[in-house]
Amino acid sequence: MQVLELTIAGKGFVLPTAWVDEVVPAVRTRDLAEAPAWIRGVFDHRGSLIPLLDLHLLVDEAAARTLTGSRIIIIDVEVPSAFDVQASDLEGPVASRRTIGLMVERIQEVLEVDIAGESDFSGIAVETRPYLREILQAEDRTLQMIDPDRILRAEHQEILFGSKPG
Image 1 (cartoon, one colour):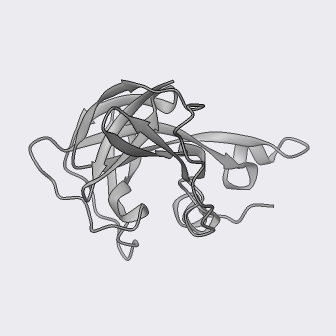
Image 2: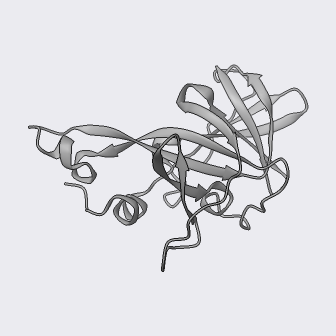
């Protein structure tokens, strides 16, 4: 599996490239009044306003600094149909995809990893951080997988998309 290797507060994380639409340099954002700290604002990307989230705060570290090498990872995440007016018109449980940007201070490199390796550890399930998945060994580093579809908890989705699921 191909992944982006990220460093957040000195710890290694990886994000599957299958979810990544694009990686762009950090840009100026429009602040949102009374938004939680993990929402850095919105930015214009090819004519669409995209919410920009601070991945550092979402993994419970200090906020990402805007550095010369800072990047925005643009991904599509799955959200329950109740957060999507168009999908909620359909019958049955439906999920749709929404585009978000993730601010990171640094992307190290693109790696090829074997997620079923013998030295991998499935990780410890933490209810408050369900997006933190298995821990992988890559060369001389340990890296923790981030599941993009689990980055936004229900309360995050409600803040960003304006309604409760189900």
